[in-house]
Amino acid sequence: MAEELGDVGYTRCGSLALAYENEMPQLEGEWLDRDTVLALEPGVSRECVGGVLLADDASVDPRRVVAALCAQLGASVRARADVVDLGADEVELADGSRIGGERVVLAAGAWSAQRLARRLPVRPVKGQTLRLRGQLPATRIIRTEHVYVVPRVSGETVVGATVEEAGFDESVSDGATQELLAGATRALPAIAGLELVEASVGLRPGTPDDGPLIGEWEGILVAGGHYRNGILLAPVTAEAVAALLAGADPPAEVEPFSPGRFAQP
Image (cartoon, rainbow, N blue to C red; front, side, top):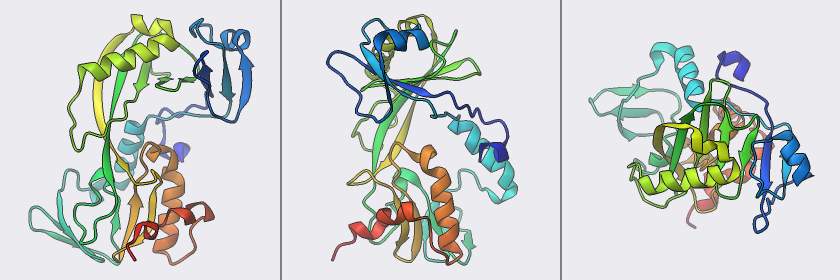
């Protein structure tokens, strides 16, 4: 996928989930003792007592992925076009225009529930993320129970992310910024010397079981509810939606995530 989109910051760098005395990662991977962790990532805090290595993990820049997808789709993308109504084969925009098609796919993230007669069980979950500049503090993705740190070859370091049940509030909080910086600095002390260039907020689409929604709902094909894993699940979601649109069987992996599991009897 990344190769087809061009340079979107994809790198198979691996990740390292750190363990502290009172925090042990619940992940399947290669357990490393403290000395081995520090040999791999000398910038890790001496508080670390070990870690779990996931050598095949990769990262990508979601913003660049979206920009590349929009560039490939060209004029068919109508940016910032507010949908005020939708049906099984047509949507109505705020300017009164209508767009028809054989099928409608609803993939509106945290806003997916707002235009349906039977509301999808989707709620917004606020997440604040930081972007820093300066010498990269690690070569791998570093994770703890509370934060993740993603170093990028561009010189940007991403720190995230809070999990806040705050409705559709998209305001940046100084308290959340300090919480993220404290957690990241505990893992990688060099974070304290980096320049904070951006604090941003996104709204994740959560569901009652925090699993995605892929399938039929009110005659509309839904692709949403991906919570914190949207960019990770994008390829299999696209494969499933394409199959369903063509009348074929989707990948078996998406079968447990039909929206019908939340339908009222």
